[in-house]
Length: 447
Image (tube, rainbow, N blue to C red):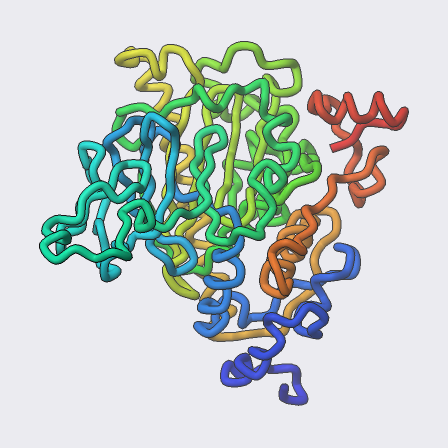
């Protein structure tokens, strides 16, 4: 590094040997608590070599969201997804959900290029080996013209990958040593239990699902979602319904970081309050917006009436696809054709979210340019606003450096009593799970 602190881009690769070492100095600033922590090095966002290592060590060992559960809800549908540089097939049979490597067991040919209907049979386009939707080899045409004593079709089913669903999402994990999805999610299923996400659906209305091509690293998008330090300047209209003083932490044990706005304001703008709310929400859920970044590639913005869900697909160090979908609870938005009034309400909500997302994209792309073309040394995190980033950075460092995914420790939650809040007061309307924890510990509830 030059004496004036400028780190030439060419020097970033000098740290490559440290990217995967558990005790490496490269990750030391992220191992501190947020009051002594720093942003991550420029290479983490801008170096092609880091991106390649990350595909193998992070995305190759994480539970990665790859689809909406509704996309593979019926037998006969096949999805093609990329995870950690590997192509994966998703199917459903009467026995449930399945995931396989997209490679024929004969000579490795790609079985499918894109999502399609398969009538419950996956056919290799090369030599027409046939597989059932649950991955069994059911036909090897003409292979018995000259029989082989060592060939048993039962031994040549598709290579399985771990595949599970939670709420609206389907996840894939390529590593057998990674803790199960239940442990990865931590307390999120309990936190969100009252919403009943397994029943939430999208709608056929125009604009309910869109994909954005963003010239920024996927981690910058997650970081921007996870902190609210930038809110008044980047999202002035959003700050009218999700006010900075009304932000509190929303995170227990699990591979996620989160915050909540309690209450969501309708004083100046009511864009989030025009659609019908889910039934059965308690006072806290009914008044709040929950914002969770589920590691590594999902953001969930949950309001009483809808969810703005984003699944990130990293394509390169400086390029990410955002797959965005609106989901709604059971009710008039999902039961048949919405009324004209509901269509108008949805359009108000949709336009508001897209405007906010456009602001997200603009600032993330600007951050990417600054990191890639400027590369200033990382600065300190703001403890009051950026604790979720410190949590996210630690998860990133762990997945990149642990010798085995079996060694992963899922982060614990915030401690009772508000001791982790760094200047924020305890939530005046805490989520039920935190109120229950406080009752058990005899301490003040917090968020």
